[in-house]
Length: 321
Ligand code: TXA
Ligand code: MG
Image (cartoon, rainbow, N blue to C red; front, top):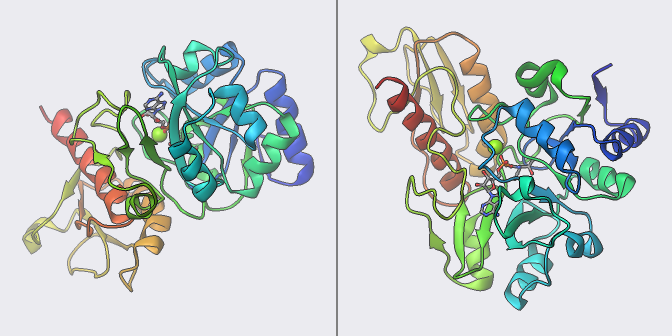
């Protein structure tokens, strides 16, 4: 069986597959990841093949403890230590200097490596069982919607993966927040850890300029796109234009749409993030002409969701050129 419930036995089998150079999909607290042994260049190459991911897009390496961190990254700065102590395990990815043990394919040739320590019990147990750091991007095809359920992984990647561990829906539902501390503290990708929480600990972060890919290579504008054209609807579209469109709403449902998904009827940003990719997957599967998305407030996790929506909309503009 390709998909299996993430029991202790299944996790041990997955660890064995990883040690033998295989590729395993697994849940994390953010989204599902597609993992390989981060120290095995040819295993990691399979991730790029399966995702059809350009090789200039570096991967995130997952570690379980300080010892494993030291295998992948040079000794970290005092400021990085503060963030690690405060936010790990959890949805924060840090850009650190890599060790020579990390193959170039993982970092796309960079001297830095993206590292995070997941808090979800499945990757925790998997990392302990295989005892190697796991390189894992989100388990979707390059540029597509991130998976928050095992079914999403099956649909996007199917038979190309050696094993898919089903651990139920990913509780946070949106990717980790990526931060670099050098040359200056900067936010490279808004994500499941609110930037305000990080700034409360280490002070202001430089924000990435929209569409700027210099700081975070691989952050191309067309990431996270559904196949259906997506439009950020700051103002209500005319009722006559709604009949064949879907609506992704933050808190309220307008009339006349063919399909509507509301992220949180109480307007809660955490609840919205947990539903976000799932709602997009559902609308995308309906063969609609267009998805109108209501803008979210750009604070807390709203910043990450708006980032993904803008990128999805950017993809539509690119395709219609
Ligand atoms: O929540 C998450 O972070 C999920 C789960 C599976 O952990 N993973 C994830 O990985 O979102 P992925 O591959 O979709 O995003 C990785 C991004 C790259 O696109 C790039 O922007 C950034 O991390 N990145 C990786 N290494 C980097 C580096 N050395 N310098 C700057 N950015 C880097
Ligand atoms: Mg991704």
